[in-house]
Image (cartoon, rainbow, N blue to C red):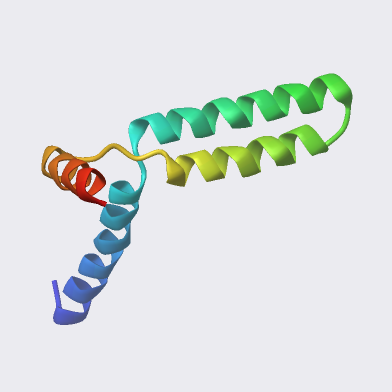
Length: 83
C-alpha cells in the first residue's frame, strides 16, 4: 500500500472509533425503539409527524445516554460529592 493509501485507511478508521465512544448500547437501543414507535404511530395515524418525532427523540437519546467507564465513575462521584 502506498503512503496515500495508508493515510486514507487511517482517516477512514478514525471517525468510526470516535462515534463508537460517543454512543452506548442503551442509547442505541433507545434510538431503535423510538424510531420503531414513531414509524408504528405514523402507519396507524397516516401522518408523518410521529415518525419525525420518534427520530428526533431517538437521536437525542442516542447521544445523551452514556455509560461511564470504571475510572470515570470515581471522578464523577468525587466531583459530585465536593461540588
